[in-house]
Image 1 (cartoon, rainbow, N blue to C red):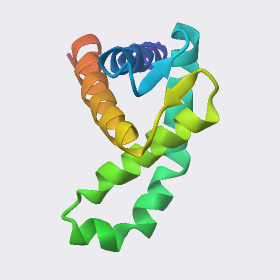
Image 2 (image 1 turned 120 degrees about the vertical axis):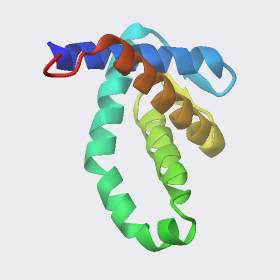
Image 3 (image 1 turned 180 degrees about the horizontal axis):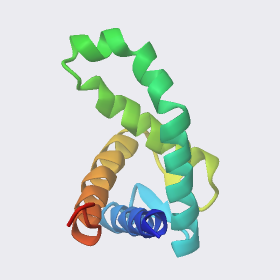
Length: 117
């Protein structure tokens, strides 16, 4: 049940990002947002660890700031793979990924409970 709630919250976070950045990030519908949330999860699970490992020297030299670039690339890749989810470029992908993570974290902390409480 918790996984479905997180999935819906991530889809809502994607809709919020598309609302806040209408010129550069577009979503066709809520269904597209739900599929995009799954796709973002899969891309971040499958590719992100490999990219973080490969770019570790640059990440260390930039004091971790290069991870924003990696997150933006993952967001942009998901927008390129799914029809109906448009990310218009690299920088909108970076800012969209940043907004998405902030909004998703806020929504998750508001609607999910910790174990033991």
